[in-house]
Amino acid sequence: MPLYMDIHTVDTDEFSAEDVVKAHMEDLAIQDNFGVKQLKYWVNEQAKTIFCLMEGPDKDACNQVHLQSHGNTACNIIEVADNEYNLFMGQGSHVNDLATTNSGELDPGYRTILLTNMVSFKRKNQSLRAEVMQVIAEHNGVIVREPDHQTMATFMYANDAISCGASLKEMFKVENKTLEYNLAIVSGRPVDEDGDAFFKETKNKVNGLCALGLNSMLYLDKETITLSDKELSDQNDKRSVFTVLDNDDFRFSTHLSEIIQDNYIRSDFSTTELFASLGFSKSQASRKIKSLTGMSPNQLIQESRLLSALSTMGNSQKTIAEIGYDSGFNSPTYFTRVFKKRFGVSPTDFSLKLA
Image (cartoon, rainbow, N blue to C red):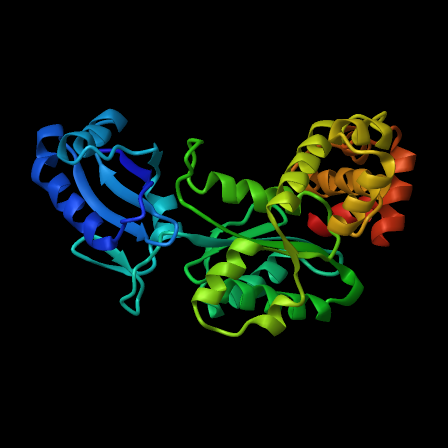
């Protein structure tokens, strides 16, 4: 049967894990009536959220179990692939289906996602990725995916993710000027109150940040800091290498990333249009973009085009000219000039290294 996961948000001051345990027992008593099997559940007492994992014929049957047993229906329920669930939520243990950490504390269900975008101009990317994967494993991370120039990992503990990010920065320093990268760490929920994908909001945040160019920036959200503080480990020295983002920063970065991704392939896309789409004046937008990315608006648009070209090379039969046009450059000559100035190597030579 399909695997489903839901989220319950409880709006009451009187909320405890004991209440959820009782409700779960009521679910177990009637689940067979709906062909559902409750597998595991996570309780976050501070955020007043509950996540339930179950097998069932469909979403409605899963929701009916909650409705008929205690009336607390889910705010949202999504279908989850077995392999994705195991990658993100496979760590930890459980006591009578209640999720716990390896140390026996309640597992709140939140996970911390690290995404790094990196391109080496000196050696094969596979060699660099192998070293990155080793660092991630040393910090108890689990590799989720490795598309093109990216590596995504998930961590049960925020402190592990922060420490891993700081260690990767030190590793990247050794590569000197032959490596371009950025890295983002964001924590979030497996199921959001809206949406239909596993860790959708959290993934969107890290992907949006890493799409803003290879600017050697490390980003960290305040949710991860909050989780880190609860884990009672002093990470202040390691946090200092990150640019910390709050909710307003994320709203801006998400909007910025969406606009750039929708328009960078247009060679006539200008900063004037970018400012208008953001709803900011030129000075306001330039200041916020510089603070977030370390780049001017013009540099950001150009960087996004170059990042698109880099992602295409090695995975396409297209010519360098075609890749340049597809990435928003108005001529192959201009594309080659900009690429070589930015990375110190021509796009043709870089493609040959990938072959």
